[in-house]
Length: 295
Length: 328
Image 1 (cartoon, rainbow over the protein chains, first blue to last red):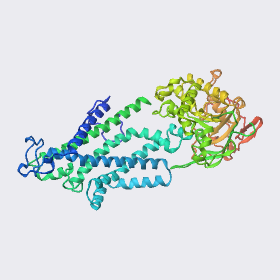
Image 2 (image 1 turned 180 degrees about the vertical axis):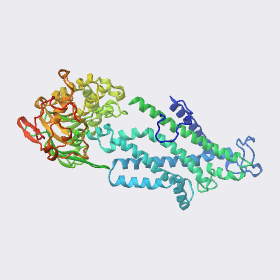
Image 3 (image 1 turned 135 degrees about the vertical axis):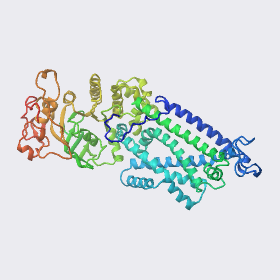
């Protein structure tokens, strides 16, 4: 950018912060992100699905033990339950809900986006209006309303978050599919007599893959934060469930006496969100680089 | 022109609605291509050449007029009903970098029309793909590679292999060589002619380069701002253009023997099809325009030797000297 920037705003006063080197950064980010997710996955499948007894039933004689107490890596909470055990058990709730919600949002968003892009006339108009309407409301507000009516629970929360988020995915898919529909190779396929479904499967979906993967990582992270936020507000999972948001919510009262009650679930959320963002950025950076060299 | 043309468009119109108004990309275009014939379609960018190609192939639906392919009206057919026609009418695109899916192997690209029309079993298709690659001068091992591994000329060969896969009766080629290096252009032109000799395909070749069209076409159709302004046998049109626009296009081409002469060219740009000039659409740029041209649109009228021209004063401009050197 030159000094003759007509927008008037002094844009480049601060140099842009670059945490990663320009070349090959995508692969590094993707690798680190995948390792972090693998760690989460192993923990979720071992500790998460099979939480230790100390995580669920408390021992009132062992309340507020600090991290490092023998047998309690991250200390204990106000009821004497193992914080480490609860963070592990919370994975199933927090990561599980985020996984279901992100999958639903992307699957539904892709279907809606492709229909809107491929079927002109009323289907496109209806879907576009629907997308714009739902996006006009903050998704958290939608989720709060639905949960207030439907009640808490794993599936209610996951499906509500997924439905509230799918318009964003639909809009991204719609925009990309519209530009793909005009590519010569898609027109060539149409002129060769290839049917729409086959064109979508062989030309459009493969071209959308990097976008969908990137979007999945970011949406997953968003859903994780949204689940925690709703649980923190008391509108998420059942109060007794050890989700990360619930743990954060409960830790408020003991912030000064027992800060580890807050730090443990917060750290878990940050770890997972960073991991997913690294994967998303990594895929995007690699796709960009491939796009430049291949074309 | 022989008895029944393979492809015949009559009174074809295409209009698009844009935020700035209705654009008449094509107006009252008539055109015929006989079996085995090569028709060249020339005109500047924006003259509607590509729109005409996409409409004849029914990637676009005309807003008026008729398109007949081998006697069958296809102008308003649904995509399902068009499928048998697609098998017989194929296209080669201008940009071989955009017309091949970068994620598919060459074998899949060439096999795409074969699969769509249930050509045969997997192994029959593989045999056919190998034949096609050989026919366009590509090595057999090209099949398992990706378009990115090939040069522009080789990519255009792949695109041609795809276009002739189903042995069509006609191929529309939209600027088939203009994206290629000059040294490669001749090879692709030769390949197209070679295929025509072997398979008897009719071509509609779109180009902005009159000499190229002259070299390969039997007849030339000149398009200006969505209308046919001149049509006739290639030799006659190039030797003695009747429309001043055709003369201008010829003059715009540098040739060896005109070196030393003043460079003559068409001044200005084609006007916007949204805001079409009154009378003859060419009059603002025409060196011989008179009052009549500003008020009255010339009809496309038949002349001797199978020629047609839309000009009030046809043949008045002998090429290329009579064009004013630098119109204001």
